[in-house]
Image (cartoon, rainbow, N blue to C red):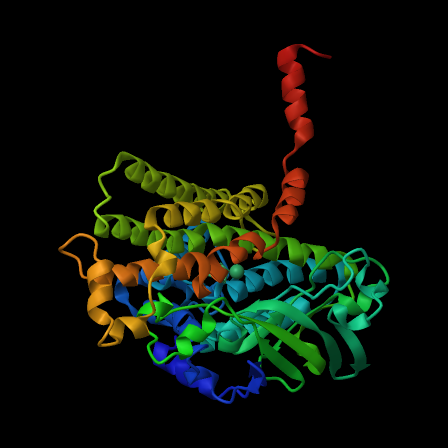
Length: 481
Ligand code: SF4
Ligand code: FE
């Protein structure tokens, strides 16, 4: 396995074509806006080096028998699925941010089982191609991003019916050696911190969409790929002279980018789906299922930090003993642990696929993510309720450090006498960061839309819920023939 430092050094060797704020970024590793997201990703390497987390952070490869980082593992049991969720909660607690590496893990598990079944049905060689890729990922401990979401253009039209054919990523040229693809993937979490990208189709497809039913893996700095960094609320605070208190979470963060593929070459042996339209939906459903499980881990860990920050803020204000305050903190815990219950439940009820790896219970994973589209918002609302208005009206750190203003701010933002004003400011800024600043991107809208927007889960819930069986149960009790 790579150490954290080796991982960071390996990123320096990538030659990404990355843009942010209208400028080309030559050194993403040391860029102050991007670096917190790298630190989060790097935590997936760092914690794997720590013996106390060995059981959660590492696994034994079913291919090589070697010890590997769990983020590159193909789940061999429901126990593996449960450990995955626990690992994600741990990393959420340590970073209070999106640590990004789950997308690739979920994509690899989805493509592993899907390629096995596609080959059995179509006589293709995709599973072997995928195994070769996976072996390299595990042996070299590579960071893999999973890329699914196309920009989609007019949502009422199929990929091949769009006015602009590039609104869904597709094959534009075929040669004996491979294919060339053009299109874009939006909202790509962690792409800048990844060595490889595993591209998958974004929706179920039908006849006529063959050029769009394409899955493959290539290096993130492949020729023809352009990255445009997504900006986040309050991101430029990281560039200010005083950038400690006001950023809330200085060390960690997440990122998303728009990934543009302009006539990018994909060699034949890196292709995992190529025109078999009826299997596009299988990859989508499985990836989404795994990632909906993931949120029952990562968002819970982030929630732990937000609940802790809120409890500190009320203690610092001398309000911790009020009964409504205690009750609201309990409500936050109840909501957060409900998400964890869902993550553990869909894992423990997982099952073996034809390829041998384990998949979560899809109904329960979709219920998990449906709750994730709501509960973090409720938790954030309660955090803002308890933190009070100072969270958004505090003077800047620059004012706090100014010799003429420091004493005033220190005096008038004091809570209980035993706590320094600076510590109180730090906690309030952390709550601001997590509910409205850069970290809120990962905790709130990502909870809403990541791994699919709420309606996508409702469609899956309606498909998986077996309403006919429930009607039969009722008829029997009501004595209806
Ligand atoms: Fe992992 Fe959560 Fe980020 Fe998805 S949102 S990549 S599950 S940390
Ligand atoms: Fe996500």
